Image (tube, rainbow, N blue to C red; front, side, top):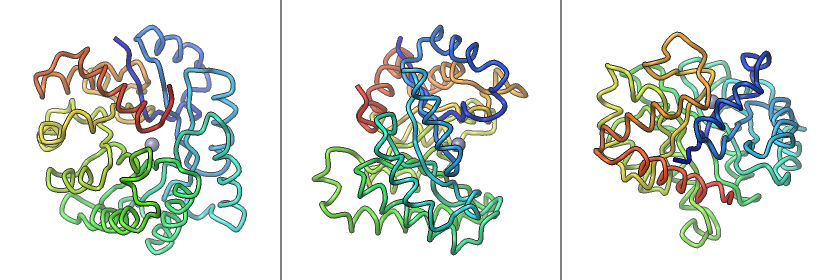
Length: 272
Ligand SMILES: [Zn+2]
């Protein structure tokens, strides 16, 4: 069984003491690819150094909405330069966060917009972060989907004529209606540890509603450990628990889920 983790912050301090052991466990668990997303210009640069050392790793470069205050005149040219690196397979993680709200919302949207345009120019898919203010106030997801709708429809050439899909909504936490809107626009949905939590019936409904060929599996390590590892640091080897839960929810054998999600990631990020 070959697995992939399409979102893990292996450059974070949490992994500094034992990154080699983490990567050994990932290989031991059958992982064939791990994508490490940047959150600002400096972390993106660090990740390039990591991917140069280990063929298991691929990078995304981008500025996270919570790092929006680091955005300056040099950021976009810096990202553009890094995007040419052969280990860079996406622009991310980028998006909107109305929960932490560390960056004014209009600035978040402006930075997102500029990076969506960068993705079109560089022909790379995007990795999107979205976090609503609360369960009741879903305006963050609403704003993101509206911005993505405009972006996908205004792309020239249109996305249907492009060799790849527009991207992934990472650690998807929307409802079935929102998941369908995202999939109709051509996006994949990243499924993380919460799918294993007792109270996540809504997310399991999404997994049932979305075709398996649109699902990616991600740990979002060091965050969001699956139920079996709650309270511990998350890491790529734990992606197995997510595959097992998806398998149970949609009643498809785990090796089929692993194979299809691996193929989905390869199709989106265009790695062999
Ligand atoms: Zn992340």
